[in-house]
Every structure is written in structure tokens, then in C-alpha cells.
Length: 342
Image (spheres, rainbow, N blue to C red):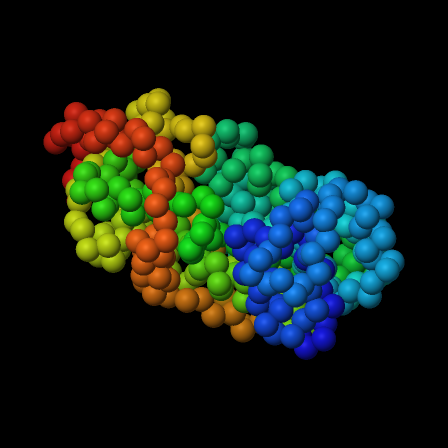
């Protein structure tokens, strides 16, 4: 890693900010391209202001520098990836694309544990309530399609990393905090459906390490890797674990999924509500990333403790939808014995 020249498209986000700091501490020479956001944590990096969709800018960066690695954290559609291929083809040793497990979850018949070869299964019927983001998954899959075409046809040196739900301090989605805040107030938790579907999370620091290990291993070129933790829990099991870590036991009141979907509480303009209600099992294999590039995941219980401590000491805002908390409590009370209690 020492002396490698690395360009990060993005670089100030939840994952990418940690990645930039990690690359810098490992001895790489790091440049970032953002629309003007500045990383105050790593002031010694070269911070370039510009729009990644400015193809002339990308080509100029490629022509004027000899980057060993380009890491694309902000490709959200195939045109983004096509521009990157045009600019960096033949001018970079490795191109790492941040993808998502959503490329699998726009299909309705993946086989758990979901392995890296299942990313092109037929798409499910369009579901606007897909908890993994229907449009997001479609666009991320299209990004990969153009990247893998370039790899197979012109040896474009791509690596794809596919993280699952990413958690940790400063998570902009505050998924874990949605439940932590409600456990802390002592009221019941309204749980859509039976809470019996399994899912996986991954610690943000581990995701940054996965990118680093992908750079350090030449065999990662031409490969895709799931970036997921080792544990898979049902929503009920996860909430019990959170209660244990928070030190507060509250009742879980389950609500029929269809009835929940028809409730105004099931949607919010600010983003996701009632996180990790996956509506089906979402278990992803991580054997490939562990064996091929030496990835190790921090145990969920360990990083949840860090996260809860961080929220206690450094966060003073509310989670998504908390202004409607009394409605949740009232609905849980109305369900009464009809709501399953844990």
C-alpha cells in the first residue's frame, strides 16, 4: 500500500470517509473527487472539487496522473460507470466499484445463503416497497453489467464489493438508532409482521477494511465479494440483543404486515422506517471474501456496544419518525392481546 496513488470518487461519506483515512494511514497517496465536501479528518489528502459526471474532468485526471487504483463510491447508474470506463480504461491498475447486496434483492428467488454468482437472477415484479430499494438495486445492477462487460471484453480491471446494511457511529440512515431510541423510552416496539425473517449487518470499519484488502490482493481483480458480517438474526432476535445491550426490556407487539402497510406509520418522507423488516430472509455468504482476501468481521455484539455508547455520548437528535412515537404506542395498545408479545 505504501506509495500507491489512489483516487476515490467520493471520499467524505459514511463508508468512504473512513476508507480515505485508512488508506492514508496505510501510506497511500490519496486524492478525492467531491462536489465540494471537505474531509477535515485527513487534511493531507488532495481534495479535488468537481462533478464525477463531467467526463472531461475524469479524463483529465486520468491523463495527468498515474493512479494505481480508482475507487468509485458514488456510481448510482450505468452512465456513471460508463464514464469511468471511458476515462480510466488502460490508465489504471485496478478499478473498485462499491456495489450493494441490493443487486440480489431485486430478484424474488435467490437461494440463501446468497452467493456472488446470483447477482443476475431474473428481476422480480416491480415492488415499490422493496426494503432493499427497488430502483436502487436495478441501477446498481446496471452499473455492474457495464463494468463486467468492459472487464470481459477489454480487460478493464474491475473489482466489485457488495455491502449489506452498514452500521456504525455517524450512520446517516440511523437504522439501529430507530430501535435503540424506542427501547430507551420504555414503550412497546411495534414490529411489522412476525419479525421472523433473518438479515445481516456489517460494521462500517470492516467495510473500509474490505476495500483495503481488495487493493492489497492482486487476485481481487475480476472478482466480486459480498461484504457482510458473520451473524444472521431475525428481527426479533436482533431486538432482543439490542435490549440486552441497552439494558432495557420492552414488549414487542407484532402487527400483520398487510395491515401495517396500510397504516400511515409505514411510510415517512424522511426515509426508511421500521428498519430491517426485510419481508423475506436476506442471508449472504461471506466465505469467498474471507478465504480469498482475508476479510474478518467484527462480532455484532462488539460493534453494537460501541454504537450504543456513541449515540449516548455524541448524538442528540431523534430517529426517523420519532415525532409519531405516540401513535406507535397507541396502535400497539389497540392491538392488545391480538398483538403477539415476546
